[in-house]
Length: 443
Image (tube, rainbow, N blue to C red; front, side):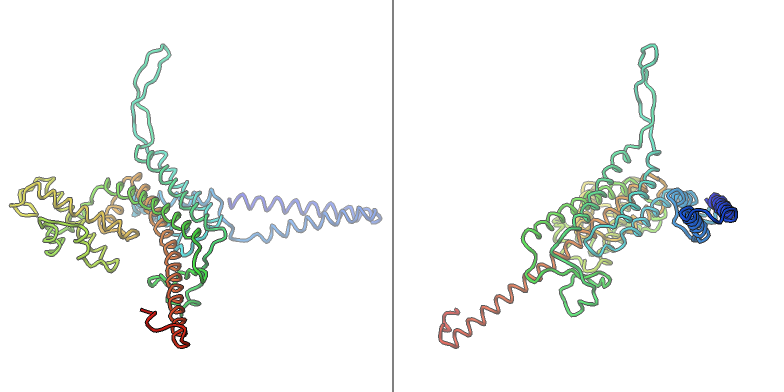
């Protein structure tokens, strides 16, 4: 492109010079041309000069074309993010996973408001995701097919088809992606709430930001949201909630297909009890077990504590499954525990893990998940995992922003109710003082 642009510059400059020579000769040969011809020549000369000046002032930095941008993206993927070319880069799977994650971060960032995406951001997201997902069109498997020969005989041949997990999940993820973008677009019209910066709302304790000072604060009318608006928000929240559940299910299914890395296994303790701790171990192995009661006894007050419990449970599950798979005579539960009880205890921790992840969506990845993503070599799994993860993250963010609006409305309604109650009490006191009502009427 640089060479082509330089040649174009030279040709157009020569063309401008030739036009000026012709104009100059015409003026010297005939100084008594008609005035309209003179004006036409000057206009043409001015146009030529403007073209020449524009070319001469061409900026050094210009926007990249789609082709150049695509070349840059795929060069990074081929190099495994090692721009030195020394072969020290990451695997193709991890490079693609990082590309999807970084693209989502640059497009969505912190979605602090319920508002449509700009057309530029929306176009860039669709365009660059199409580039990255195009890789999946070439991940195929052989399947039997029937072919009719020229003589009419039917024979079985093997043909290629997109790998089944990609064939099923990529269109589904695209649909979930589109639903989230449409949900944001729905907030582009007139709505009954607005946002103010955190700095202008310091005196108001109604924020639901949980320390996220960079987020704007949502405001609702003094009388709260209308019933129609509140029902519509609840409907949008339910739609996004379904998207979140679907994305989480796909992500969990893909991660379960990725092999547990040896580096993670080497870091595990020798038995599940050491991983869980004595207190959790005893709770899980009781004859009577209630998952809700168990979670109520756990300290899940912070994201760090929740993630720590998930890491402990996942580690213990890997330890027990490996012992069963390898038919190790020394059970992590002790020699007195039967196979049936062992499976029962494993089902219990799986149930706990499932409940925690659905109670606390949007959590950071666990140690096991991070290890799987980093060591995974399957490009198809990498794309499915990263795409479902960014959709899950966006869905959780949108749902949180809707909950912010509903929470602000709840606070406003509660404040109205309190003011109304105080007003009634004040009226009653005035009536008692003036003798219009007796104190016994208040009982």
